[in-house]
Image 1 (cartoon, rainbow, N blue to C red):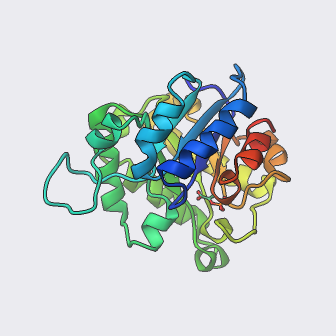
Image 2: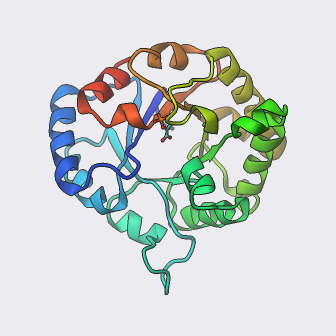
Length: 250
Ligand code: PEP
């Protein structure tokens, strides 16, 4: 089981192989292995190998891929399969990040197929769910996140174990500087765990639920200390190695 809290960096489309190496040099020098937390880095796919090499002597740091295609191989120009990501060093797969959903039009059905692909290669995967601002204002947050959860896991629910992770990332909080209050985030995490319990029974108890959305050096400790928040998924504030060290030490 992953040690909690789980602190995950999503670099989005930042840090190619050269910048990734520079980042990892600083990060590895400044962050020593700790028994009381798990650190994950999701670099762009082209930097997976470089980051994996840099972290080869640090099994405490997991490297993940930000997105996969559901097929094993084929005529899908520009895509990366779960098998290829694993071969490049990924030991975790991010599925359904809001930028995939709302910038690239990824559907719940496609997320479900990606979850199947992650299960096929035997890697833990982190499914992201979260409501847009209009959905929040319409009081639809619960409906949106439970639908994303149920539809995303539709074909793999029977396989779910503690290797599965969930991330609650309200879309209005991602990259905006707006953050859910710890209380609001806890409430949605509680709802998500109840929904997971309805789906898979007591296996839901062990599943980490991370919060993401404008986490920074100043708010990380408070958020991660809130009930039901088992870790953080961090975008912008994870791009600078110095900030990321402060967040993982929070
Ligand atoms: C993210 O990319 O998952 C994210 C939460 O971004 P940011 O921390 O920049 O809001």
